[in-house]
Amino acid sequence: MAVRNEAQASAPLIAPSLLAADFSRLGEEIGAVERAGADWLHLDIMDGHFVPNISFGPGLVKALRKHCGLPFDVHLMIAPADPYLAAFAEAGADLISLHPEAGPHLHRSLQTIQALGKKAGVVLNPATPVESIAHVMDLLDLILVMTVNPGFGGQSFLASQLRKIATLRQMITASGRPIHLQVDGGVTAATAPACLEAGADVLVAGTAVFGSADYAAAIAGLRGGR
Figure (cartoon, rainbow, N blue to C red):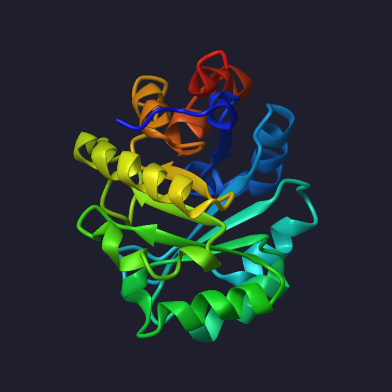
């Protein structure tokens, strides 16, 4: 496992995933997690093609933007992704992440996101090798490691991805760039410590936060007292 440096040793960022919220009262839900101490709001965009489910689009992101002061961390699980980058940027996304498999030219897609004035991220599914992003590290603000197969919440954490997280932390350190390393999928108070030890600094949690009776306690539990 990679050794955590001083910056990583600070409290990790927590990004509750809206997918697990009560959709009948989204405005209240995002206000509640913001007051509970969340750092970002994670928005999963699914098209029913790239992944099995359909979630929501830029219209909802725009509607939510006026109700929340948190950075919007938008994860595009759609293919092709390029035609929708501008729409999500205009809707209020602060960071837009996409999968290498979601288009033929990852380098160009990341350039497009940055040209829109947004932070750019890339997402690695469990079977996606780290080598797929070796030549775009200079364009990245975030790398997201999926510790489940994407498409729906409530899945079990895949411990096999911890080695990938550690390898990516080494790649980030070697790059000398301030790239966030995020983990999403089955993240709970029980699995978070292993993610952080491997080198993650941002944790996405859905049911672990929105399924809790006390959002603030759930977020504090994910931080592990950091």
